[in-house]
Length: 302
Image (tube, rainbow, N blue to C red; front, side, top):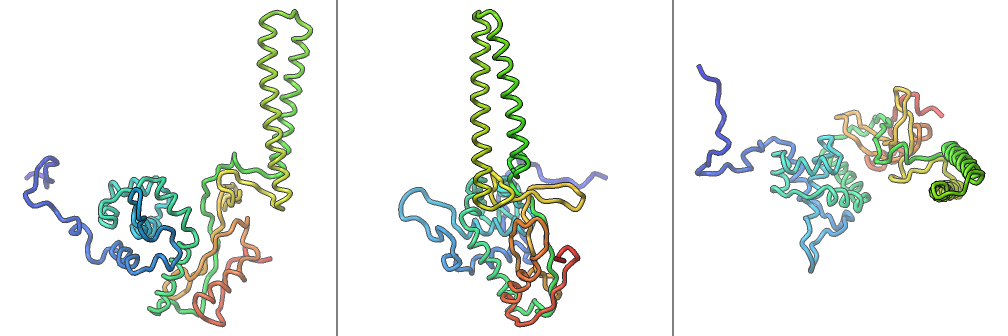
């Protein structure tokens, strides 16, 4: 008996398959589509919620939001990975009607609509509230580390800047010693060329020193202990295993009825101390209650 055989890849079909047939009626992707379609994006604060009168046509804001929400639900946050999904994931193909925005467009949409995306979450929380999906009596608050774009190399504190300046000064002193050695040697063409290269290296090192000093001054004036160059709001944080990572501290308030998130807040605090009260008050506002019981782990102890 033969194995079950699939269709030949180069076989033409007289009646093409409908893309809609690949998405079952109970697929959560249909919920994303229906929910986003009913939203008033202009009222929520999205940029370019209506098409331009002139110039090159742009992607519909609702399509971009659908892709973002799909990525959020399926733990696909990278703009590049979302772009790949538009080319190979049947659910995303159905959701966007086979549109495939590039990763820069996806990233720009997220960057330009941070506040509006927060408003979408609150709108969805309001919908859950109307559907009586929240118990509104007990919430659990917890913090999670979400990795940032910034690398550890591009994150600085005062100790790191001090160490970099010390290392640069040592290098400059070594090169100056080499220059003194060349001065004592015969003034030939080879030594002149070497001296010119060393002088250029010293000049570059002095420029780097000035950049570190400017960065140190900026940190002192801003009253911050860390500075990230690529992702300015991110901070270096310790992990549960004793290591560290460039991250954000996401505070979430979760209702006990269906374990749905009622409210969240993105912070760059290195730990959870002092966060419980603020997040609880925000959750109470969303849940429209005057009193609520809030629980958290010992990491919230002041």
